[in-house]
Length: 216
Ligand code: B1M
Image 1 (cartoon, rainbow, N blue to C red):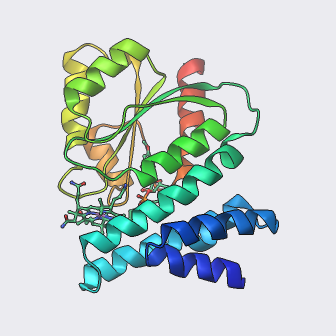
Image 2: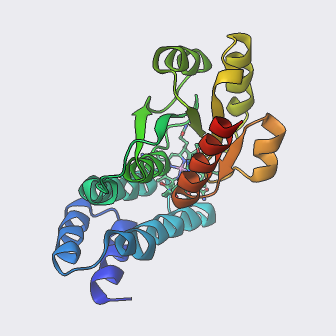
């Protein structure tokens, strides 16, 4: 790993947002790709933050400032990752489920989807089942995406899907789920149409699901 990337990794872990911003800009100016910044420094840093939190070496404030530092870097990377000039391939409505405030993973999926040509409507975090239903009615997306990052909030997928069914909307919309603790098995159990472990896979699965629906 280059010195710049390893410093970016370290500073993200300690949540030094101004320095993370500086290093991100400097790395880009030096010709380091946005992908490399993401996958070689920023994401591994947050994984390590999570591991330290689990071991009891870090607490919520440390996670919070590391998350803020990462979000600042993502703001810089967003236009670079999303600006591919791809044609619109479908409408994707995205939210983090009720009770869950994690949004970095969701935002990264959104950026990648935009880069692949999706029109993304982000309805934020802590989205209640009622809000998902209202937003699907209003925006009529091809896909509704739900993120959950806690084992305690994953059950909201099932509640949301049930509410979409009750509102008569389930047949008309593809449901995708994801987030750190989610698995394909869990997605199957709650009745989702698709699952992805990371942002790049989410784009591929979303495209496949839309193509399958249109050809059906
Ligand atoms: Co929290 N947190 N957190 N946290 N946090 C985790 C998730 C945790 C795994 C840490 C740990 O213990 N190792 C743990 C969950 C344990 C569990 O349930 N199994 C945890 C906990 C316990 C908590 C609190 C309960 C702590 C407390 O208060 N005691 C609390 C809960 C608050 C709440 O939501 N109600 C909490 C709070 C927070 C902060 C607010 C401080 C902050 C969030 C800041 C923010 O998001 N704006 C935070 C952070 C930063 C983390 C970690 C360290 C990093 C998360 C992250 O951004 N990762 C995290 C540890 C970890 O994940 N290793 C942790 C980087 C991101 C790019 O990856 O989010 O996995 P990820 O997203 C991926 C995929 O999941 C996938 O693609 C993304 C990009 O590749 N994906 C999808 C995501 N959504 C998708 C949707 C799709 C498809 C793919 O289709 C629709």
